[in-house]
Image (cartoon, rainbow, N blue to C red):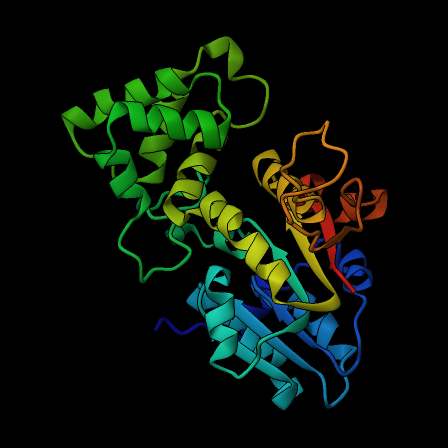
Length: 322
């Protein structure tokens, strides 16, 4: 494992967590309860949860990134026995918790997307701002990286990914340019890919909407880490792990994630599949609870001024049936 010094940890994880007070309020923390931070990161949200737990309370932090595990372990070490940190993915939360003898919990938090430290550590290849090998793996134990996606996927697959996950209207041309350039030599670095994407977008369109490679990098990152697939497949199971009146809080950072969360919560609140003209439900599907946030919670002006990452953050909350 790569070791990181105390100064690195302090610098990279000094950012205030997004929507912190809103998350703490949304979780409705019980001092003796059991809570799970399924995307531990630097431990900012977890620290505030731990402050509110009694000696009988417990927090389990889960993350697939070894750097996040190391950093949060340092930050949260004063909380001792109240804290358990596990390396893994929140999609495996049920089995991870069963390994600890835990079947139900009082609250679960997911803070989706890439942490600022992952963007800022250039060698990880998440950002078009730094020269680095194409990587983008949140868990470096997995084999699939951005290099394999960019150099190995066929043109139609690249087009689909950039169109669906990047929502880029120039997806077809970007995919075409990637395939053309990799025929000459493999595309190996973030700057190479960034320049190829830039050349695929008309010059007049490069002047607005941020960096021209932003959407393509997002799309490839989502594919590499199976972000939407995992989210889509996990939410129902996470709700089932909640105790009565337990809360699931999910912070998303782009419209694709938010749509998945919104639709999953709606289905959990109203799972009936009977035709709308049926006078009574006959499918037998029962609500799993209720949506607390009819509209997502977003950051206020003060947080927006202080934290650029907060601009796209949306928090949705679901409460299990009592």
